[in-house]
Image (cartoon, rainbow, N blue to C red; front, side):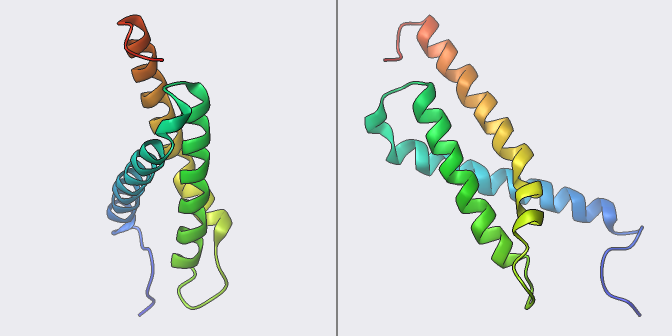
Length: 105
């Protein structure tokens, strides 16, 4: 018997990876946004914090996906790109809303 992804469990694998990537990147982006509060509530803070979160996710994920072999940074980069872009969009929309209400700096 071969181990790995088969047609029967591919959907479950993709859903699991997607949920894990969304939750992991959410936690990383919230942490980096909190750590960079001193930059103010602006696009620069959003861009820097999400770039740092993406780099951390790719680095840690690349080693995690290695599974005893060489690190798989490109695989991790592909997995975490869409979730990070989603959180960038969410944070930019939230910033726009705060500015419309006069709450952002």
